[in-house]
Length: 211
Image (cartoon, rainbow, N blue to C red; front, side):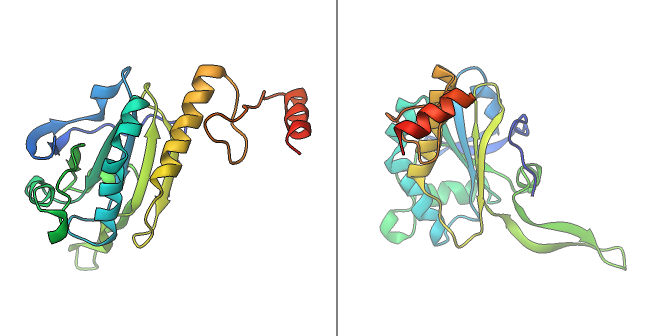
């Protein structure tokens, strides 16, 4: 598994469904450079079981991301037509109607591969035939990307394990606190807590105050 922390997020241009139902042919995270932080997350597939709980949970707290000037973007290996259908299917019928943030199409699996969250890989048999070894879907990868396009946080879960939206917000708060104040964030830091001066004196002062 690649560690992308401190590196530029892989660039791509791909179809997507935005605003809950509008198909676009060319969507890129580059549009946010210099403008917004981005939470870019992968999920295995449309019309599954854990996935709608995550996508709907992101939408439920979308105003919290907007208050922090953060764009939320999802991605799976499904087609734009599958995304569109899922987005326009009521929740009580297994859909995610009401989700408005973009869902990117990765049918070629290249985006998942470049972010190194693809749950398998292509290989050749002894007969020279191409086959896929593993599961041709993405793990639950999540990447927090700053305004310069650099990955500052990543977490990757196996398919049965849903993510915490509150933890994602906590990491955004920590990143923005560091960007705005220059102080680092100690263990279990939450918005409103003291930061930490990254010096020996600062560490001693913090630990003495919070022992």
